[in-house]
Structures are given as C-alpha cells and as structure tokens.
Amino acid sequence: MNKEIEILLGGKSHILCPTFHALSAIEKELATGMTVLAKKLSEGLLSLEELAVIVGCCVESNLSSEHLKEHIAKSGLAHVMQSVAAMFAHVFGGTEASIKHDTTIAYGDLKALMEKFPD
Image (cartoon, rainbow, N blue to C red; front, top):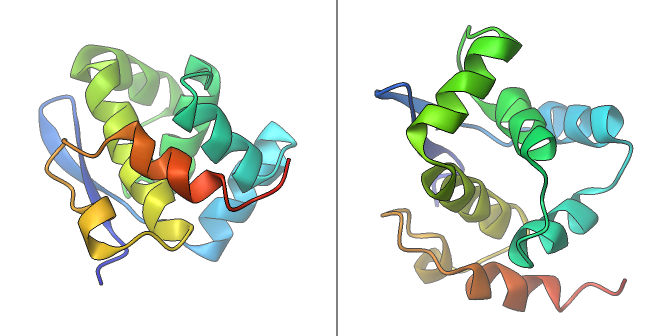
C-alpha cells in the first residue's frame, strides 16, 4: 500500500507524504493530536489554517507558506480536503478501498475510522 497521496496544487501534481516527522510537525504547530484533527476533518470542522498546516507539513514542495495557501484556495477546497482525508484514512489504518484516491473518498470512510478512537 502506497503511503503517498497525490494532490493538485496550482495545476501541478504534488505528493502528500505523511512521515512521522511531518505528522509530529503538524501536532506541534497546531498544538493538538492527529486523532482530533482527523475527527474535525471527518465532521467538516477543520479550519482553513489547520488544512494549510497539514498540507504544508506533508507536501513535497518548495512552495512558501503564503503561496501554498493561495494554491489551496485556487485548487478547490473540496479537492484538497479529499486528498487530506485519503491521507488520514491511510494513517489511521484504512483499507485499500477506503483510501483509493480518485477524489471520491467519502468523509464517512474517515468518520468510520475515527469512531474507533475515544474522544
């Protein structure tokens, strides 16, 4: 199973790679755990800033923070959120079917995975 998820930013293909270092950087910058962030995403409550931090920490790119944020906005929030949901589904042990990344992953798949984790 491939841990890398494709994301289109600014019309170019990039890779989200959820390494331990990247996930740890997300937790540190947002001062919250991955399960809380995944639950927020699955419930549609993730803020734009949180989304930008997650993408910024995991994307293999040399875009500045401000350019990255603009690319996220221009690329369509639904697409970016789908890519992050696919990455989170993988991180939390989703099946191959639930993380198939053709931009049709349902937030329900991630939500079902998150129900395994207590609040």
